[in-house]
Image: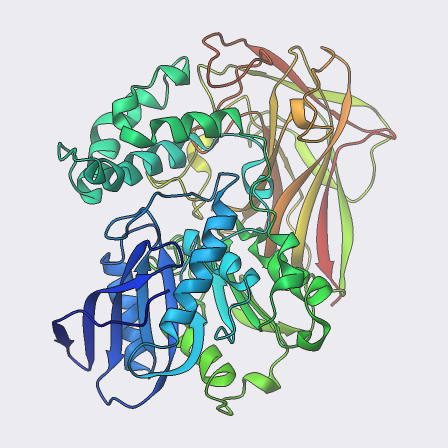
Length: 577
């Protein structure tokens, strides 16, 4: 591995100076390149390292690195192997070889960063989403200069966020964007030549056509360039568990801080805190931190709470400040109050305050069952579906028709993230069953993992069931809070695909993410059950055949059973008041 070498040309940016394309030679001779941002006052400082597949010169990284440098840190943003200005071949996160490659490169990059000019020898991390996968791999490799990590926006396991289902809207767009760098490296400079052009090309011209492609495998390879086979292999491996980050927790020998949001579709990231406290080195227990706030997945680009509800001034996020506070304590030894705070802080929606706890999930949250009930069919939000604390004795089956050619549309933007939004555009769809409480007589605080237990049947050998927790305010807004799904072929585990016996009731449990909210008196708790959420998730063709090569779609008659011993119900983690 090479000694640190600074490239020529230091560029001043206000209170910060940046050196572009600094070379780091890994143990196999591959050169990785980074931009290095330094505080203007000089002296020695800890290094905060972000390794990314998304182009180190992106505006989000320029902003984050500059802000961290202004707070007294050397911020380094590096293109990972095979991406943008770095050499080598990309080994991505949804591959079997990815972890080994990233652990080696992460170790080498960390030790290189610890020796660059101005470094005091200590290294921390930052970077949301994919960069946080890189961080966990680096930490598992145990580079001696790594002293603490900050991660956000990445789950513990693959399947807790994908459920073994292709995320059509996000993934096709993402692969089209990522192909820009791969094509350029192969000498292809045709349109789109930049990621901005690629995103515009997809959102404006291609999205409406190729999301509906039947079969999906007929999508032209040229849209994904040399990465086309990578995408196709992922289709074949759609139910494979790639991340397995819980297996790394025992090897991570530094304090960790994890940040996630209530509307991050992969807020299972909170499990990193639980895993490190349970399975990490004993001497570090009590030093890990978890922050959960009213944000979506992309906290670097949209650090603001959802716009359709106002959660007050404490809901906003200054991410550079949050990161710097963590490292001021861990790397600089500053007494900034962090040591006096309980390790978990979660923002309670509607209360609009932060709650501090010693553990996650909070042990004071007790499961409360809300049974599906009603005096008639539950179709649409004007139907007769109810949520009741009392188990109905009478048995009843709500049914609806799921037609894959007319799926329930995802109420998300082009990025496909699970933003908070009013569910009113779906109010007249008969293929959504709506169960809701009467207006609450008193406030109800809910904090922790949400689950839904359903007894269902279908006329087809495979299908999907979705559950979405919603708050219906006194103002009439119906805001989504958490969601989950089950592809029925995986109801007995992802390693076994089992067809349904048409018409036979089947018991399933759906993990509906995590939530933190005070349902106010006068509001309603609502749960929607349906069979599609497209294009957030691939629409099930109901045939049981491989989704990517199947050109046939079947209409399914779906039933959700209520009452009796197998009554379907929602389980909420209710805090004692």
